[in-house]
Image (cartoon, rainbow, N blue to C red; front, side):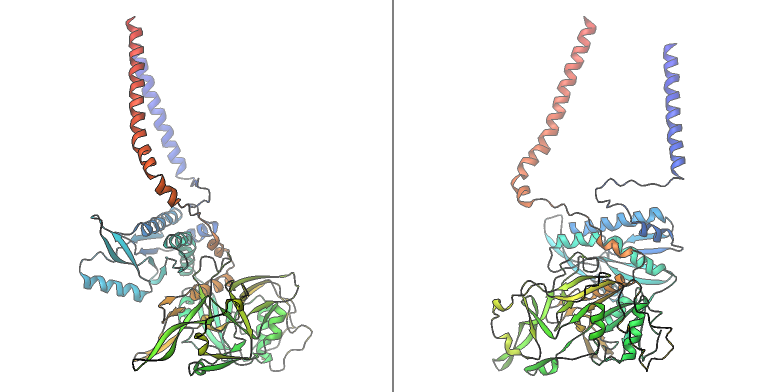
Length: 569
């Protein structure tokens, strides 16, 4: 009788437990929640990301070209991408679809090379990786650490590997993982957005032509509608644009154009100023020497009113790029050698600002020092680009000769550090036309002069060549080199990403840019301690579990013996 009652009780408990589990699952189907127990919330999406993913009204298809046999670092990157896309799918199960593809999967080398060519032409950057085989040998493999996103027949490439030459491979991979959420969600937002923001390159003052800003234009076109044109004093012409780029002008700005730009800023417009205060003729230099001189663009008063002064000097830095110099005749031929050129400083973004965080080094050509002026508490100034601790500034006019590469630099002369060449200004600016009349050649009737701006931002860089890409002639027309690529060293600097970040920061009204500031701690092992204590921990991990099992068995045997000996007695 007792046995039947006990059986009935067990069955009832089982049914009750199953009912509770089913009820919890049913309630959970209506209540969506996720718990992230990590310290830095590495598996939690930002509110802006969740909103963008939830608002998708069609399928985003992501093809990630990281699969097959990969080195450990790239396997970590693949896992992080997979986990992030799974998080996206949790908020949009139908509209986030993805697959991982191994571009090296085909054994036929011709087909494989054809795939590589297609991916490269699509915009993905390859890298060489060493893969350790099962037999212990090491082989080279071409890896494309990137993805192609498709939305309604529109495809955009996305390179996901940071490649800062000043950092180790492990740190570069870690920074790539940190940036994944921002890189993916910003591209998804731009693909799926029904309205496209517009940015404009100014013309009419000798600015760089469309070819010499072709690469950055291509990059911006993934996010914005990019236009070009002259102001010609037409008031309100810039109003439809989220940002305006002034790229290396060489002719003076008339007052009517300055007024149009000023009132655009006063109404909340954003400007990226890329200005050369000092002119240097490269054609003359490669003949042996040249003279650097200050050239007024009639922008001095305007920039000064906003809080900036561009100095009539040039920066020299021991941390610099190289140029080819003919050192004479050797064996009947010109002896060309790559020599350090101190006027081409290489800047290491040192602060942790959202624009410069985790960037590669940036190349500057004949840059000048920027001074921040004024005590206006309504304008916040942040230095984005600065020289190394071993630099100097030299006034102009200045005689420059290639013979400078023959002399060993006197380190005592490079006694200035962290000279600013790029500054971000944020706040409310005063109009340069405050208490002045409207220039007579302005086209359009101004409804008064706004003397104080709405909250806005601008960035000033004292080098116009930071945005300039090389252009070579070919039978098929002008060939545009990647921005930041140096053909003499085959190194690509971070100019392109810096400028894209700059425009994205200026135009960001949603707070999405703050995702670039997300930090996932790199918890690296102490390699020396790991090597010193490897044997100890191997023994602990091997022997301790076995001893615990033996100890548990002995204790169980004694317990059973004690229990049964009592029954017998």
